[in-house]
Length: 171
Image 1 (cartoon, helix red, strand yellow):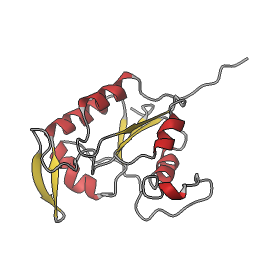
Image 2 (cartoon, helix red, strand yellow):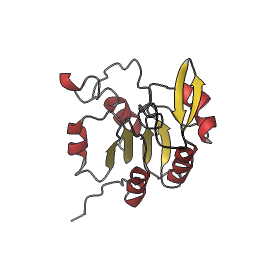
Image 3 (spheres, rainbow, N blue to C red):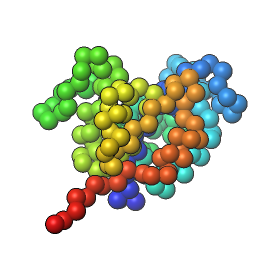
Image 4 (cartoon, helix red, strand yellow):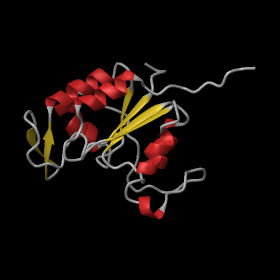
């Protein structure tokens, strides 16, 4: 689906909740020396979302998400946005000092999207970015509670009105 908007997905806090005892249905996995909680329903929801979006990883797991998580969630290999070891490039938006931790993915996501419509689902999105994106039809930023992770209402929101290219009316 080449014209579909992109959907950038974080892992920790979204697919792997911080709550050590999340809702039923999560399975514990030992991956790369860490205990990871994953729910098969998340895989179902992501496959459902792939009908409307082109899924991409935007996670510090980087390529390890494809190697270790995608098979457990029943997902194919997905494109990976390089968010680790970010180096500022000309044209990147400035990150406020108070947002260094929460905003480090923003410039790599914008660079990867390259003007295409996109949604971003993460547990660490600066509130300023969420507010500034509400009036942009080409962007949808969805913060997730890191203790609960991805929930059905997030999926429904993504499906209800995906981001779209903004076209100015011709005069």
